[in-house]
Image 1 (tube, helix red, strand yellow):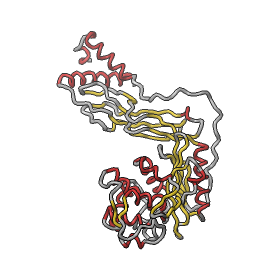
Image 2: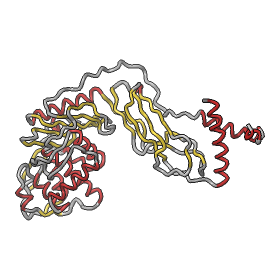
Image 3: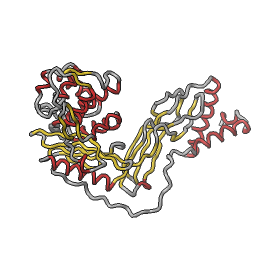
Image 4: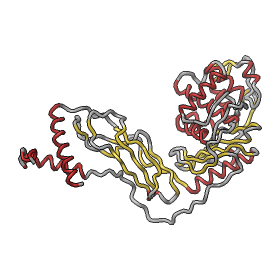
Length: 404
């Protein structure tokens, strides 16, 4: 009480008004107004497939909609070439290589067995042609040629593949070569391959367009894309097939309908037809019973909490990437978002610094969490600004104790 008596009521009133306004600042993000009630769609259990392992997920939100043994380590066969192609695309995007760079074809590349693009020893082939040969016709010769061009050989290139797999969080993957030809220590999992597919689609969308091409011709030899779904489902636009005797028939597929993109991975089926049919079952299930909603744009200001001791009093808080959520159809009105922002924010605060979390719920179920970041820096204020904020902060905490 001695501290309170040292100020006149007239001088204290503005501080009290500021403190009261801070106590009542809402933390709930605004959500769309509820639509007219609709009959809720009943969702059956996901389909059971004639395969060793599978997974279905949304490419934007990352939500898994169906899975079976998704982390089992299995031979990936030519699904390996998704990483080979990803590294080529990465080098193209970074400017380290160009599409028209001429790649020499070694005898080793020419002699590599299995599926081929049919390059010849001594040929010099553009990077863009080899990339198409890897993606569309699964050319082992093209894969070896690019590995030699980028890393000096298949072994150092496999080391590079493993480094990137680790960086992407592919914890059940290890590569021994760029082709997928059998090796005891060469394996991956359905979940890891879906992770890689998401990066191919989202990181390099311009390159992704080649994955839907149905034919590729090189040296007068025309070959079809082995992904049968490209002919059967107009929404399917990728990604890659694979087969060896040990792996069985495998397929990583992706399809987009309206604003929703799904990725399916099916490993270890008995035939080309089976891998297409089982993949179609997963995709049809996902599109029929789920929808993906964009909740917030990258950089959207979700709240402006008080900052103490800064050159400004408020901090713009938001997310550094678009926020998507995949939910059962006809339940979007049940989505709510709660912002949990760190108490007593004090300058200086750097742009991009995490200051809280956003929790998204579907009814009572938590379906997603995202970090809340400072969208701009707040520098430390001057001496008198810091002193004044200390006084305000004292009374804010004092009143907060009264109201608890």
